[in-house]
Amino acid sequence: MSTIAAPTSNSADRNGSGHRKHLDLDHERDSIVGRLGKMSPTSEVYASEFVDSLLDFSHRVGTSDVHLQPTRTGLEVRFRSNGVLQLLGAFPLGANSSIISRLKVLAQLLTYQADLPQEGRVASPKAETEIRVSTYPTLHGERAVLRFFGHGKEYNSLEELGHTPKVTEQIRDALRETSGAMLVTGPAGSGKSTTLYACLRHLVNSTNGARSLVSIEDPIEVPIDGVAQSQVNVAGGFDLKTGLRSLMRQDPEVIMVGEIRDRETAEIAIQASLTGQLLLTTFHADSTATAISRLIEMGIEPFLVRSGLIAVMSQRLLRLLCTCSRESKDAADFCDLPNIEVVRVPTGCARCNDTGYQNRAIISEFLDLRNANLANAILNKGDSREIYRIAIECGMSTLLQQATEMVRQGRTSPLEVRRLLGSAVRL
Image (cartoon, rainbow, N blue to C red; front, top):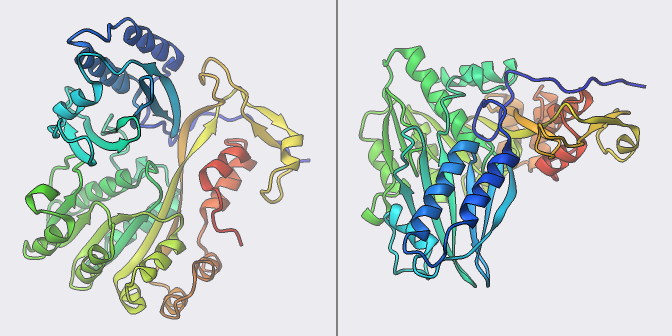
């Protein structure tokens, strides 16, 4: 019977926003709930004090997202910790001042327009942090979601991200190319932008400013010296497509596009990668192979995908078990991961705020499309499973394989793998 060790700390582990000293989340949550609960909803300054306190709490705990959901009786507030939403509490909307309206004022949005979605940014008192505000009409009023960028200065370099040495070297090798596109894929909150920014810093440092680096983003999450960064302004007619076309006349050598969202942007980006520019961008897909299939399904010709793409990387942030975890043979019996007889399962203690997990680690897979066998699969419009099978035969270590190894080592649980990867490609 295999024996696994209790989880230990790892320098590559991360929480929602970076390395932090141990924080008593329960204490912070109780403190903010108590403070918000003492505020009078009839006060003229209720909304401004509520928002100020909520932003202060968000900075202290390093959350990546805060959700404000209107209900029939008030406002439910949730925040994301280690990638998982947690309830903060239910609070009054405010009789004489509106919390959502206050956020809209800070983000310079139209307070009188409540029937259409809006997006803006808050000028945070924390110089290193940017806050994006998104509002959306719902049955009981406007819902707002706050996304926080750049809580800390961690993960600046490729080496700090926590990828395996092989993947890190594959990224470096792709960045040496003078043309072609590299996609970083994964769901929201998987660290795609952090990886892209680390790639840009690597290019700045490794070339000593000898390459022309430009970006078009929505929004600019982190400013980087040595890169000419531009932000989308849809209201002013400056969208991703317009910006990308114009960038081609700025003599760029490396272009970073915040995200490919539609066919037209994808076509322009791939065309740019064919005309002597290295293009870096993010794309929503659950695996490297799925990203290729999605591009083809969007109407991008397979020969363009074959010629334009040099690499696709997919990544996730996997929660790590706290030292309070325990061994379980029973849980292993129901584990659908291969060749595992004993697993560790979450228990919960004061240190992990009764969640059973502390911090996160990155897992990633890197698909090198300069491989002739993969090229043929793409040109033949092979589906994602076929592309995935060939990639594995060519030596690609998959997200599932890395997650399975972490379960075998006792660093995470099968439940966390299922939560994170769901129905990831299994061959």
